[in-house]
Amino acid sequence: MSKYKMPPKTAMFLLIFHFVGLPIFASDPDPVQDYCIPNPKFGTGRTARFSVLPCKNSSEVTTDDFVFSGLKNFTPNFSETGLAALSVDPTLFPGLNTLGMSFAKAELRVGGINPPHFHPRATEIAYLVRGSIYSGFVDSANRVFARVIEAGEVMVYPRGLVHFQMNVGDKLATIFGSFNSQNAGIQKIPATVFGSGINSDLLEKAFGLSPRQIGQMRRKFDPKTTR
Image (cartoon, rainbow, N blue to C red):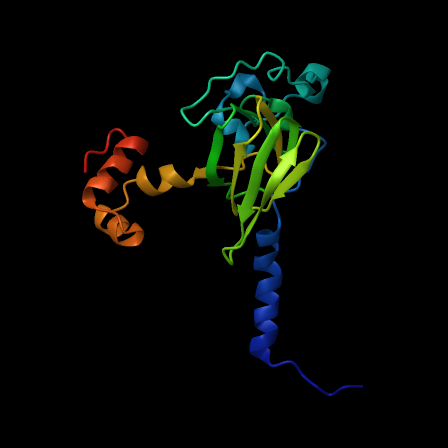
């Protein structure tokens, strides 16, 4: 039998890591009941994402609470990048509340792009319903994993990593994305960098751009910024 004794500081570190570190590896909290349909009597909207609204009495819950028909009549409203998307979380679909998931439908015009972005709280699985897209992500070692995927293929984008899509086919591309969080969050790189108010001097040095070029980028991503 070994006589080795773990140093007290090491034991304390492992204990703290065990209790503090566990949530780091988790996604949304595990539900403590089968479901929680927010009770509309106490309000609706954004707060439903965070499980703060009282649940309906289970006797008042119906099948309709677990069915979402909004994708059926989805009318694309394309951005200047050629992207149209509908993100569905408990705000739109209360049946998702506390279940730790959400989803989105996106359409890309020919040549259209979904600019580089990331989801701070979720891994995404993207299923290409139709079309051909150049799809990929960049890891923390700055290695890009990208290729053209076709209808019927699926790609995964790990949580917190920058990813992107571009329609390289000759017809509209349709993508269905699923997230392992009911509030995945999204940060679009161009808007985050040039539309958030970061000091212009810093941006000039970081990207090697002139004050005029920085100004152009600011006006593009944040019309209210004049500097």
